[in-house]
Length: 392
Ligand SMILES: [Zn+2]
Image 1: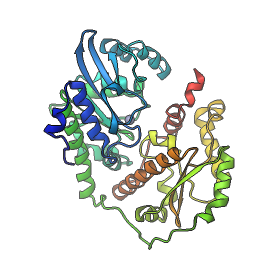
Image 2: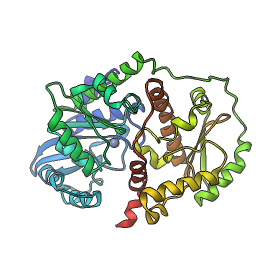
Image 3: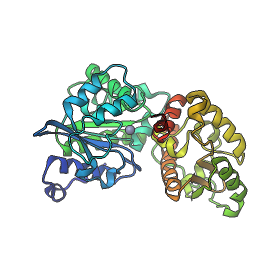
Image 4: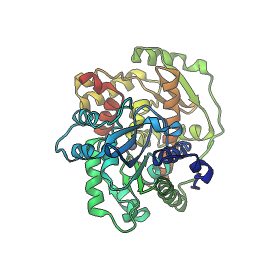
């Protein structure tokens, strides 16, 4: 990947925070690195209040992020939260709110502790497609050793927040080497760090390029397209299915269809029922795509199975807050059909699963595709989807 950093772009930045925001927008400008709401960045600065950590707050996209979209937090206070044993994410959020040094400010990112704990001024985190395509396989340990080694040690999967931050610190402390520039978060994404924004940005590109090169050497980069010639069905044929999805969701659902050659080729794969049942490439996607797509027209059967999954991993009370209607249909005639309660959520689901198709295809070309475990997906769907707030 080529750096998009320019002297002119950087020259318009008056502060280190502005440079961090500039680097963030460069990362956010490439959908192969960052999709809707994914990823976050930070910088640590000296201020009259002491050492201040500015982390991209919740509710903004990296592609358009400005200085005001970063949450300023007292670093020492945040590090105390990180050191606090046995904290759940609700407790973490309450404590982080008290570390905010200026308001108005966006709510602190769920990954604030991860940014705080790494001893570098700038930290960048993405769910880069190529890294997920290289790492999301059963053979993750061997592939990681070949692609990254101690350049970016591998952190086992943990739920975002306190648990993931603590795991990152443990891995970093135990495995950092002279060449370490980042961390690989298993079945989640990648972190790059440095003491200035440009280097952190360019190290992220280096880590992603390593994954791209690995996929190319394994003949896992070029995607199958239009294996059989595309023949797109008529939307009228989907009316009964849409009525069933509306009834299951309890709301009229908007639909977004992508029938490009890769989607059609993917939806016509003979191993579709195997490779799509692991879940999306990073748990954040499950908020919009759900864990698994619908592969038939049997919405009732899908909803019953999905309810069973939510009940099993969340318990009946939490499960009842989430509808069990599919958000993704993979169909040999239509390719990718995404559903959402608003046009925007249908669009986001379509974009995310479109990337999942590329990732799953590439991962399946060099190994056996694997995603975060079902319990983690359910927890992500519940907490990142905002359903956990009803507990407060
Ligand atoms: Zn993440």
